[in-house]
Structure formats: C-alpha cells, structure tokens
Length: 286
Ligand code: C2E
Ligand code: MG
Ligand code: MG
Ligand code: MG
Image 1: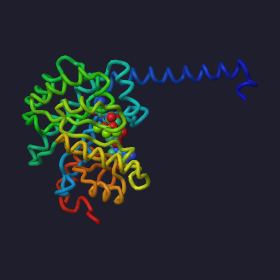
Image 2: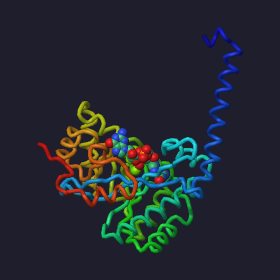
Image 3: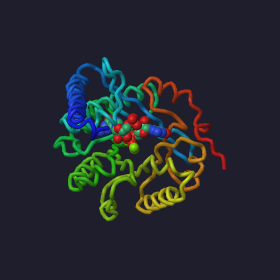
C-alpha cells in the first residue's frame, strides 16, 4: 500500500515522525518541571535473602506522575533524561530522597538497606562521590546502608569512568552492584578489578529458567563466577515458584520479583515490612 500511495504515504510518514518528535520535545519540557513540581517519587521493591528467607533490603525505583498523562514508565523518561542532560538533576533528587527516606524509616525503628540506580552520566559527574557522602551525612545514614546499581552495559561503556567512580564510592563505604548482568559484554579480568559487591542477573534469564536449559546454564555459571570472585548474586524478576525453586537450588543469594512483592510507595512498603513475617516470605518447596 505504501508503494502505491507514493508521495502521500511519505508525507504521512513524515507527519507521524514529527508528531513523535513533538511528543518527545513536549515530554522533555515537562520533565524539566517534574522535580520542582513534586511529580517524582520513589517506589520500593523488597529483596530477600534466600538462605534466611527474610527481607534483605529494597530497590528504589523512580516514578513520574505526569499531571496530564499520568504515570510515565522509567523505560520512557530515563532515556529521555539521559539524552537531554536532565539525568544528573533527576539522579541527585533520587540520591537525596532515598537517604531522606532511610532516615525516616530508621526513626520509626526500621533499618532498611536501599539500592538506587545510577546512570553512566552520573558516574561522570565530578562531584558524585561528595554529593552522595553529603546526602548520607545530612540524613545521618550509614554509608553501608546504601547500595548503588549500575547496569553492566553502562559500566562497560566507559571503563575508566566506572573504575574511578566505583573506587570513590567504595572508599566512602557505599556498596556497589552490577545490574542487568548477562546482557552487556563484561571483560572478566576487568570485572575482577571493580570493587563491586554484587551481581544482579538480568530478568531475561530468570524468565526463561523453567523452559530453557541454556538460561539455566547461564544462571548457574553466573552464580559460580560471582561466588568465585567473592560477590553475592541477586536474581531480579522472579515471577513463579518454579523459578524460585531453581534459583534456590543454584545457590542464588538474594531474590527479587513480583512473586514476592511489587515496587510500592514508601508508606505501603513500611506497612508491608512491619506486618511481614520473615520466614513466610519465601516458600521453600523442594
Ligand atoms: P532495573 O534497575 O533493572 O529495575 C528492575 C525493573 O524490573 C523495575 O522496572 C521493576 O519494577 C521491574 N520488576 C521487578 N520485578 C519484576 C518481575 O517480577 N517481573 C517483571 N516483569 N518486572 C519486574 P521499572 O521500575 O519500570 O524500572 C525500569 C528500569 O528503569 C530500571 O531497571 C532501571 O534501569 C531504570 N530506573 C528506574 N529508576 C531509576 C533511577 O532512579 N535512576 C536511573 N538511572 N534509572 C532508573
Ligand atoms: Mg536496578
Ligand atoms: Mg536490573
Ligand atoms: Mg533490569
């Protein structure tokens, strides 16, 4: 049909592209107002220690409630923020908000480890380490309570920057984790030099665990590699009891996914964590 319509269809295509570009531009403009406008929030998803079957911490995930368009997923606005240079502003907000929340929970008697996600652009920020240090001090939070996740592909994109930022963060006592592991191209010798504490196996491998021998072999290999390097392993995106059982068999240290809990607002997480029976969290069914 496109061929027959000739020039007209091209015009349509172009109009469509313009609409897309215009929408992106509009969103970019709106995102600039999001921080000041109080439209951002963090949701928290629990992670579990698989041996002790209890809550081991939470991952903070950024949410944008657009005044007209409603909830916009991070898969949409994070790349936009990275392209438009807004990511450091958003990232700085996340750092401060996560520390503020940890302090608030601590005051209510709950000490929760919080993981935040960092973009590669933030690693390039000259004052990232001092910013994080200051946020921790301002909110009287121990550095060891904070974990920073960087995706494998971002970490490998600019090895020198990653190395420097990891060393700086590690020096002040913050824990580091390589996110979405298995989807990037890690140099193993390089991985060995990074002061990371943890690997998070990408959701795609977890998703296929029950149906693909390959996925199972990859997860098995990643767990062994991590343990050999002295790192702990987290599986993200655990959705079924079957996946959970396999991960326990493969000796995965921590589990995270909809099977246990979805990301939720801070007050909900608090109520959930207070009412939550530690040993009932993970059904160990052999
Ligand atoms: P991620 O860091 O790998 O986070 C895990 C994502 O998987 C989250 O999506 C979470 O809601 C989702 N998830 C958790 N359990 C399950 C499950 O069992 N099944 C399925 N299908 N999904 C599950 P979310 O919140 O949409 O975030 C997507 C990505 O956006 C994150 O992936 C992270 O890369 C990025 N992101 C989120 N918040 C931030 C942030 O504050 N800063 C930066 N730089 N990136 C962020
Ligand atoms: Mg993450
Ligand atoms: Mg991840
Ligand atoms: Mg992921």
